[in-house]
Image (cartoon, rainbow, N blue to C red):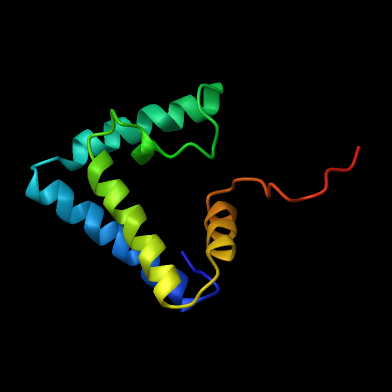
Length: 107
């Protein structure tokens, strides 16, 4: 994954490290996480979930608390490094294939 701003990468790395540490501390296995994520991937394909719905935001997600701590890190990191929160979100959406909410749709 390549992002346009090193501060964005720093925010993502921190998020992932926090999430992984949470899973390690509370013995949440990769298999549990992968199974939950796969349920969301299948849901994206069937229309049960929209691409903008992240599995980690779901309270039933095994790594939910770690994910939300990672989200808090992102907010703190982006703001303390004087980066644009809206640009960060737009770049994350672009990398995840989520359509631009501000794009003008032509008929």
